[in-house]
Image 1 (cartoon, protein in one colour):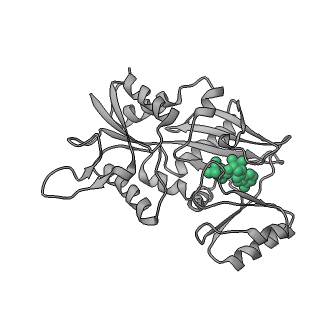
Image 2: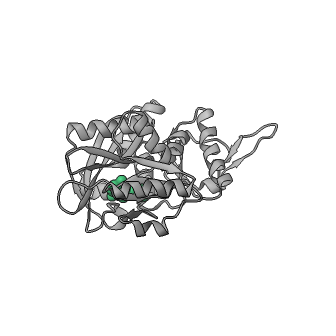
Length: 300
Ligand SMILES: Nc1ncnc2c1ncn2[C@@H]1O[C@H](COP(=O)(O)OP(=O)(O)O)[C@@H](O)[C@H]1O
Ligand SMILES: [Mg+2]
């Protein structure tokens, strides 16, 4: 029986869904925390040690979570992911894709660099410079969003609407990330989450934040299934390609002029909200893509 390592510190519903989907294909999977991984370079033996994989390395690695920590800790966790890939063990999404997307500054840069529509964004160290940019933006009638460079589920995101909001503008460990606020089309606040697997859209939904401009499901946004139109689908597919991801959850807002703007590309997206409204088994799609494309397994 094949064996898969699912990297996670909190398996929860998603971990269970993956375990079931792997089992359906004849693969045994184990939850492993990256905090328990070791590099062990001796005369013989496996160079990477994981609990549950003492005698043989996994056939593939599924990354459901990378813990936070000091710079050294996070670099070490990414080293483990890179090491697996260098040993020709598939890592889904791989360490580079995760690196590129957990850093919102790099995500924005890569989207823009690929010629994709994304809001005006500034990432900088110098507070005075950042305040100058923010003042100018506010004077020109724009609102701004300040985000922690590493963050998810809407954590630490603030909206800057007026000059006095700049008093509390804080950096994330010394780095400021500012983005022009995109006013969405229609009533209230909403954006779209498009789920891409291997260059194809498998499901999409609209997330209504209601009175809140934060449309994260973790913040209570209401989900509604949508059929992604060709333009929306192509943007999401190109965004996942720009970040070289096997699969991605892409956040896209339609502005008041009807133009789409890509806000974020998630390399470890949740899919519980999506599955609650779409008739699709995301875990089965992910497992089929990983096993089929990387391990050349004929799907049952
Ligand atoms: N530039 C923006 N304009 C309008 N809304 C935004 C903007 N950036 C983020 N948001 C809102 O905040 C939510 C969270 O932002 P996002 O960049 O996706 O970070 P997170 O990783 O926390 O999900 C988005 O889904 C969207 O609703
Ligand atoms: Mg998001």
